[in-house]
Every structure is written in C-alpha cells, then in structure tokens.
Image (cartoon, rainbow, N blue to C red; front, side, top):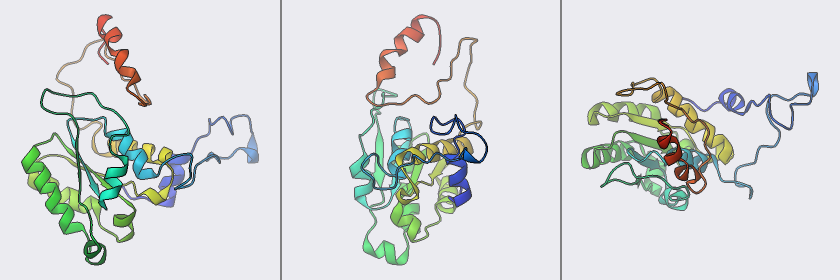
Length: 222
C-alpha cells in the first residue's frame, strides 16, 4: 500500500461523523475537520497509532524500521494478552544511524527481518515505516516481499510514517495493512454458529479481558 493524498482522504472520509452528520449539501464535508495535526498535544503520530493497534497481536514480531527512539517511546503503551506460556510480546528496531540515512536502510532492514524470522520463528512479522525511512525513500513493500520469501513467513509492511497524520489515522493505516495482507489469507481450523467478531475494541488497559469469561461461559467464541 502506497501512502498517497488520495489514500489519506479515503481513510479520513467520515460522512457519519458527529461534526458533519447534521449538515446537508455543500456544507457537509467528506473528511472530518477535527483531525489532530502531527505532534499536537491531543494525540500521538500515525506510527504510534498503527503500533498500538497491532501490538496486541502477540504471536507476531513487531519490527520498527527507524531510529531506536521511535520504538522505545511507544512500546508498552497498550497491553496484550499472552498467546502462550513462553511468548508475550516481541518488539525490535533496525536502530538506524546517520550512515543509513545517507546510504539507505534497505539492506539493514532485510538483514533484520532475516534475523528476527530465523531466531524467533514468529507467526509473522509486522514491519513499520517511520518518518526517517519514509523521507529517505526506503521501499518497505519490496524489502518485505523479498525477505518474506526467504524466511518463509508473512512479512507485512505497515506504511505508517508519523508525519502523514494523527494517531487516529495510524489506527486506520494499521487496519488497511491487515485488510491488504492478512484478512482472507487463511481460514480458522474450526468454526461454530456462536462465533463473534468484535471490530473496533479500543484497548486502553485491557478492559475487554475481564469480559472474555462471560462470552466463554455463554458458549460464544470471540
């Protein structure tokens, strides 16, 4: 997925937004005007939004392609349930240097994907772009596709450089990555008539986890 102005407008289109839903005709804006600017105090950047949306997926590795501070400043802001006795969350960074900014970071990213895949054997690897790697033009899609064939697991590019917009936009970019690379690629081992898909749960402090036993006790699979 390429981040274009058209794609950003598409993701920000909210015809049912509370700021617009009572307006008609020319007065009805397609995009909500209440979008936070990157760096504004009311929210984080697009990378932060993408990260907090996907980090709760615990059986995959999360590789941030950028300076080490991008990963360090946002890691742990959202909790996750463990998916196994020996696995919680796996976070990594390519820790770009000034040399990488000058000469490009694609080789460093390729090597990092190989190391994470071979050493930790995750179910998949989410690779996040950041401001720096987007500005220097690293081709995240191409590197992920090539490295994924070598390690034999899905390597999913998440195009989320912080400067493209707010944390809210980052949430949507993460969803786009899932729609493009994950949803529909496999089927569950079994299904029941009582399966429930919950979309849009906003994980602040794991509120949903206290409700999960109630679903289980009523015979529902969430």
